[in-house]
Length: 461
Image (cartoon, rainbow, N blue to C red):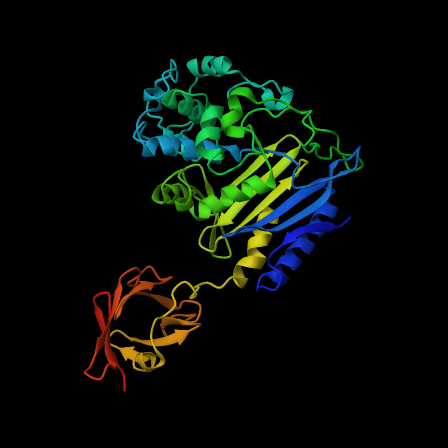
């Protein structure tokens, strides 16, 4: 069985070889794990650049997996619920730092230790609430109705005090979904479709139960129960009141649209860029320092790069959507079987591809100097702190810092603002990133001094 390359827009680029290596690596793992079917998507700023399929959507019918097939994305649903909460926060309809009971009146119990819990605690999984809502639904597939969830909450006692420990909670995210309904005045499913899915043209994504008989739903299969067993069809269930935590079904194409939205939210009238960045930012760092939690988004590190997103796991499906916002690279993994982890598939993509992406692009900031003007500007400049070189690189003006351990990778780009004035774009947060660079010239037009932020660098002979 091979991987079918359905789309590859990276051919001829610096990512061509690592992409081939990655897909070959995936094929070997998928074969070894005997995964029935898989879809793999690599996303860049422009969209879904690479799309590959493996295996079948149904073992019995041998139907090949295709991009049209739907997968249950389980906990990836939490990202959409989190965005909905932050939309309402932006609009002033709720405050994520105020008690949840203020927005969800039935969030009350005989235990007083629920009183301090806020939406922020639920978004960061630091509320101390139980993971589930007290029922055995992961065993018997009988998920609670909203009324049953309310009944459970009436006698609920948190396991820990808020902010004592990180403690993942499906219950907490479900409560946020019902908060969206209570505050907005419309059903959760309708809200998500109207304010997130429709603006992103995610027309193949369903918020609540799609139904096991849907012709485009990839059949989900169980894990191996013994060394010589086969994969059985996994039980299907409607998660009901847990939908905001685990109910959505989607496609690789739709999830690629969602990934691109996270790269450039300003292109969509959904949520402000600063709000989404706040959601991506780590709000709770695990004591191991191996991962962090934003507002709904989970965060980790791969070879020094911050990777954001979420995994999904429900009986018969393992899914993942991860991205590096800095490098505008994302990966989507959709598997129609239970598997121990999908992390190795996403991490390997970033391990192989991220080093091949140019760190500091210059094509965004072309210089506007004539050859004569350029010759009067380039050179070495210094002050009592150190030296730097102004030079042309790939059609842009850049500043090279010789004290940096990798000065080529850390080139600082100059964006033209007006005559002799530029804005500094740097990877180094400790410098004058985002500030003005000004050229000071003599009577003949030769640049004799650079003013970088508030520091002066004089031309060296």
